[in-house]
Length: 217
Length: 217
DNA sequence: GTCTATACTCTGATAGAC
DNA sequence: GTCTATCAGAGTATAGAC
Image 1 (cartoon, rainbow over the protein chains, first blue to last red):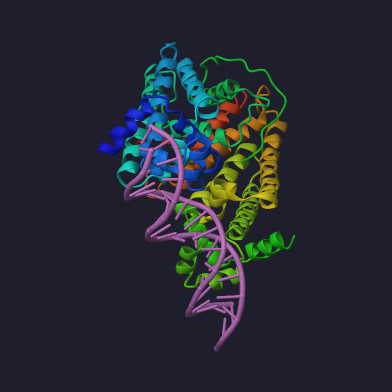
Image 2: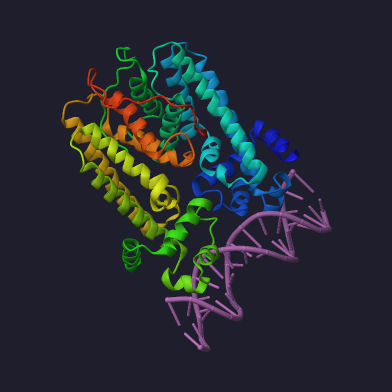
């Protein structure tokens, strides 16, 4: 399909138009964002925009492809720095969270606006997300292979718990809040690891208590 | 403001129009849902709909109020059945999750479409959500008061982790999947509790391993 | 590749008869 | 309270000059 090929090509570069569209999608949602807004913000007219992306949905698809590609790459790079299974989980979570709430807009758009895709584009997104999930399952299964994890818990549920909590972070995190992006990732990884580890497996991090903060369900 | 008063009154009853609107908002999103679709599904014409809710946003506000009211009531009732802090957390999580992914549409709409509110309505929603958060903080702090919890972790972060994971469940849960709603709640509560408890505090549940399942980030 | 200008559809909301 | 009929505006996408 020529559609996804075009999108992939553009996603691999760093099209500023895509960045602008992504920011608007994140701020106002895909449906509430108009192509006129995107064109305005990009310093173009709607007609010119249409030359590069023939539909609004094509922009979304390009962002989704870019988002998952970036996340996959970031997680792969992050875990390469460690062999300890807890360390790998913690670093992978840091990488995911950094992209989601700090460094990139594409993975946010993927997670929260990707459902606006339809037909083939939607199916394509599902495939890409499944592959990203498999990357995480690999990390967790490798940890289980060391024998340091309890065996009475489905690791898919662990992944869903961890990534669910991480993804929801985008709903409440503020850069001016009490915690940095990495601190949230470490706290989540630590809590989950202690729940996952065999009784007696030594905790790895010592967290220092900090003042309370953080609203939203 | 007459707007929120009207909405509150309707939310307290069980308006079938609201139920229908909520289902469409959940399925297609607030922005992508048209008043004509709602009117069609309700067996009314747009003009008649307008007699009851003067704007589409007013329907959303009514749903948000209903969603948080229902969730608050359900959690309060659930924790009343137990005194053990872990039990209370587990039962509260069950109640939240049941409404979110099984029994009601309003809390889903609140969490995922509430951001489409504007102005006073948005501020109103934020107040309501803060109050709901406070209910959860109370549950967690009571648990900490028993001395059975680690003291090196910010309980607000624990709430955000737990409710974040729970809320994200709506993205992947399927009634035909391997786990029931309650089983997911129990597994999450168990994992988190083991991460939270003082080393040596006895686990409460024994989970039985089940076949893997569950996609989506 | 970007512009001007526009076609066509659908949107939320309203007015007023019944 | 519900209907019929309709408005004014905004939406995406297009055609064609430059």
